Amino acid sequence: MNQATAPQRWQKVKTIFQEAVELPSHERAVFLATACDGDANLRAQVERMLAADDRDPSFLESSPVQHLIESSQQIQSGHVIGAYQIKDKLGAGGMGDVYCARDLRLEREVAVKVLPGLFTSDESRVQRFIREARAASALNHPNIVTIHEVGQVDQIYFIVTELVEGKTLRRLMDERPLQLAEVVDIGLQMVSALTAAHEAGIVHRDIKPENVMIREDDLVKVLDFGLAKLTERKSDGATARWGEDDPVRPLAPPPSLAPSTASSIVMGTARYMSPEQARGVNIDERSDIFSFGSVLYEMLTGHPPFQGETTTDVIIAVVEKDPLPVSSLVAGIPTELQQIVHKTLQKNREERYQTSKELLADIKSFKRLAEAASGELTLVRRAIPHQSAATGFTLTAEYLAKQIKQHNRASLAALVIVLVAIAAVSWFFFSKRTYALSEKDTVLLAD
Image (tube, rainbow, N blue to C red; front, side, top):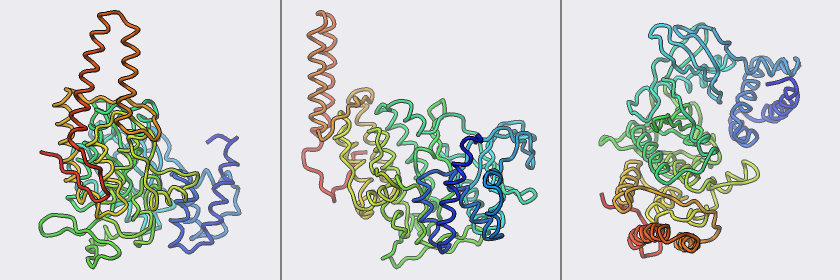
């Protein structure tokens, strides 16, 4: 942070802190989720100040810029933690700062997440930090980041993971619109990761584009299990679902994995929360399914399904409002995929996919059907507010007709072939669903 912006940044941090410090501790998480509006660094700084205030209420009297620097202390390049030499800082979040480091024993590049110093005296923070490592290390899946080590050196708690080189899904979407084939492939890998986590009794709770990395070889990695929650396992291996009206209660995990927050605490990122998550009630794997649906919707349309001027507005939208149909924003999305999106985003979790395994099966079936019909998945992204997918196809056909008039006979023949192919694919998809989709419809594609 440069000196020109430090005072303004400090003022924002201080204002939020002064409001938060007056609240009971159990209400602070909800307030910070709204006040920090998704700014992980801002929230981390305020939380560090709150932790410092719990230890020494007079700390705020120090220099604001000095405290801002101290509250976000970074481990310097060259510092050695255990067997890892720190190189560059990669990012920050509410649960810690992430650095690129060199494994001095195995001579490889790794990522090291470090719990901020002010949090080491907060037992719940330490347990959440350790829980992230335990949760992710229990999973052996190509689409989940690999945990190498969790350790402690001189009151520094750290997690060492594989270094994933590539782009976050957020950055990829910011750079360009995604093609349908990419959307389906990324979505398939994300749900595959979630299926592995859910079958192990782990709910991620923070599925969003920032927590998904795409490597150069197109392999997807789901990151950051910092908000992961353990759920009870049934004898048949299925996840036990529980909520405010469910008599089933979560299994009491070992002390090192005990949940650190009550069910009334809002955890996650507002734009991608499920309605039950936004309301602060108990959640299960169906919450991750809703969050995935929000990401899938944004990959297809370029817009998140729930928006608002403030975080509070977004949360209200998540809980109360239905998103615009994807077909009203983008032309050419097959009906089957529209129905998958629709089902993942049901407000009532009983009407969503009940397991990520079921969702995974439908996405795989859709991909097979689409590839069998056309050989590849293509998408014409068009901003067509309040138009159906069928209308979108008509407009695409009109566009091709204009092009035909402007080309010579050879080009005309090629374009006619393209037009016929598009018509055949569209007929294939739209003929599969002739009834109107109701709120209680299920999607079961042939396997």
